[in-house]
Image (cartoon, rainbow, N blue to C red; front, side, top):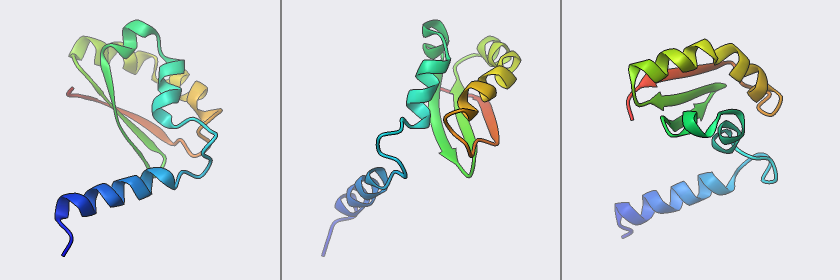
Length: 93
């Protein structure tokens, strides 16, 4: 019988290997190109699912700043992530 830890690792590695376009950068890499170095210090990529990109921000001040830039950021990312519908910024991290 396979251990749960091994099963989870196998599933995660399969999911990571099944990218639609392996040569195309993922949402996390695109965020690194779209944001400044200072902004990147205050965010953490959470998930990209069903066209929604979720990012955690470490303070309410940075949450406010990034919300002001949200539309411009979506415009930049849509060029590479065609299915992007929304960016959710939430306090966490």
